Image 1 (cartoon, rainbow, N blue to C red):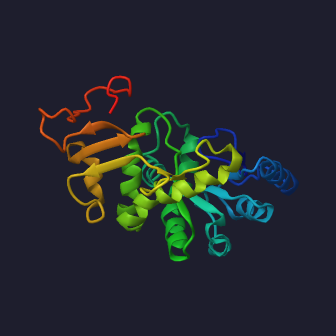
Image 2 (image 1 turned 60 degrees about the horizontal axis):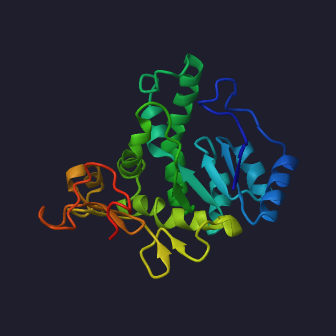
Image 3 (image 1 turned 180 degrees about the horizontal axis):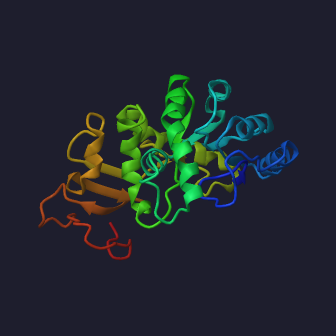
Length: 261
C-alpha cells in the first residue's frame, strides 16, 4: 500500500497539526493508482478536514484522527470493514499524555502539539468504539526504547481507552489480518488467511499461563508466556519439562536450520 501525509504531525518538526498535506485531486490520484496495483491507500492525519478528504477520495486506512468530530466517526462507521482506523494507544495516551511524559528528543513546539493530540486520544477512541468503527492496532512506536512497548500498547487499549481485552487482542490479530489482505496481488501470502488459527491460514501463536481475556495485564509478564510459535517453529516452549526435546527457554534466537521440527 502507499501512505499519504494528509496533515501535520507531532514528530514532524515543521508541520503544524492544522495543515492539509494533500489536495483532493492528489488523494484521488493516489487512490486510483493504488487500485490499479490492486492495493490501497493509508493516511496520516488528525483533524476533520484531512479525514474528510481521504474519505471522499476512497482512502481505506486511517491513522491517528485524535482531533476528529463524531460526524467523521459516523461516516467511518457507515463504511463497515471497507476502511480501518489504526489506533496507537500507548504513544498517544501515555507518551503524549502530558508535557512531562513527551519524549526528551522532542522540541518544545513538538511537545505542545503532542499534548493537544493526547488530550483528544481518549475521546476519539470512545467515539470509535461506541460507533462500531473497524479498528486495527497501530505501529507508530518510535524512538529509544519505545519499539519494545507493543505489549503496553495492547494493555493501553483496555486500561486507558475503554476497550475489552478481546477487542484489544483482535485489533492486532484477526482485524490486522483482514487489512493485510487488502494488498491484493501484492500480498505475499495470496492463498492463505492471516491472523486467525484455522485451516489454510497463517498465524503466529502465543500461549500464556492464564487467561488474558480476563486480565490483559497478564501479557506483560514474560514468565507467564509459555509458548511462542512463529512460522511453525517454537521459539519458546516451557509447557514441557526441561529435559524434553521440545523444551525451549528462548535464551537465544533459533532458526529452522538449528531446530528443524
